[in-house]
Image (cartoon, rainbow, N blue to C red; front, side):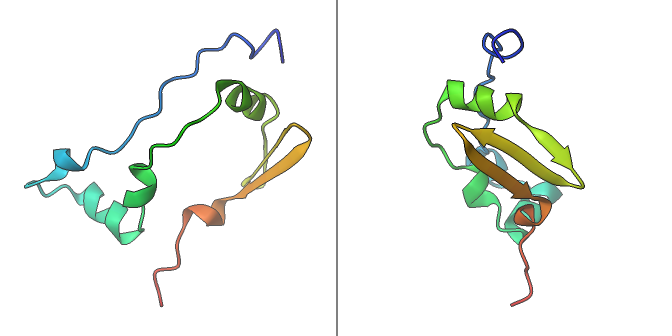
Length: 88
């Protein structure tokens, strides 16, 4: 970890600027809306650089599932979490 990740630069998070889309008809914006991603893509929360580094240092992807561990807490992210069932 210390040799590979401790000094890595973490890029500032990017956020969706809703004003950019006003009065325009981008297909991607409609897709973001359809999948209910607007709130997620405009979310601005605090984050901890050291924990981000640890997460990526321990990252493994197997069969489309992301595994990591931070402070002995396992983290599992399934691809399905990125897709919302739009049929209600």
